[in-house]
Length: 148
Image 1 (cartoon, helix red, strand yellow):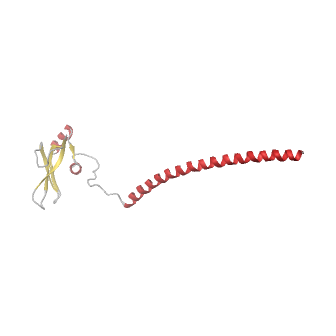
Image 2: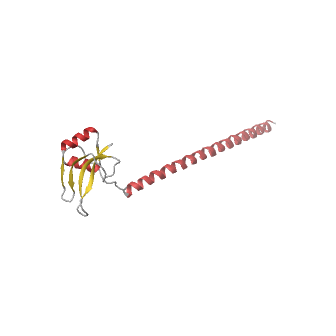
């Protein structure tokens, strides 16, 4: 798979980049297929060969996120810029995720509690039925004694 990448050139503290087409797994210092332009981030200047970029995009080359943003800035392609850096979760989001986890575990605990309560209720109902049966037997005995 071909990628449109930035190849690092220049001295320390004076870095600039070449925009190249290269195999995705190839080393950056290795062979590349074609040079498409350059970018100097210190002066925020760049030069891109639009016709060659469009040719490689039609062939299926995928730009990296930074290259994609440069192509949008150069108006070679249209769309929204992609976020380049990964953002860490904010504390609030992390807390919300923890709360959701707790609620899920509590939900499981509550389900087991409910099952136990159902079993206890069944046992109580059975005891009540037994008590009612004994009370009805006592009533019959009382009626018999009353009749005498």
